Image (cartoon, rainbow, N blue to C red):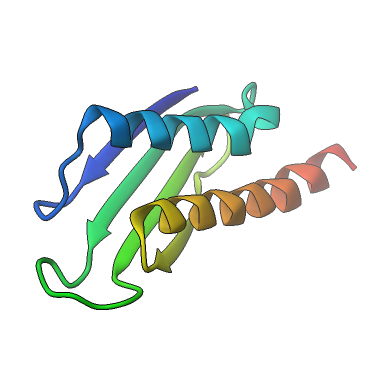
Amino acid sequence: MKVQLNTDHHLRGDQSLAQHVEGVVDHSLSRYRDQVTRVEVHLRDVNGAKAGGGDKHCTIEARLEGRPPVAATEDADTMRGAISGAARKLQRVLDSSLGRLSS
């Protein structure tokens, strides 16, 4: 499963952020490793340099083998919170959509 990280111009996409994203995605989606070919993570700071709560946004899109992609989003006060929230939501989406296929 390949993880691709995209950030807006307000965020530094450094190595520690990339490692955090890969760790969260790998942990959350590990049971779907065989079905998910690629995961795209889009991070942005909605307010830019301005202060404010809930301005960190994360969208995670999973590309599935032979199926349309699925995505989840989360807004939070911190980037780590947004990443974790979007990963949990995507896990529930995959549980729902792929679980129906196996039933």
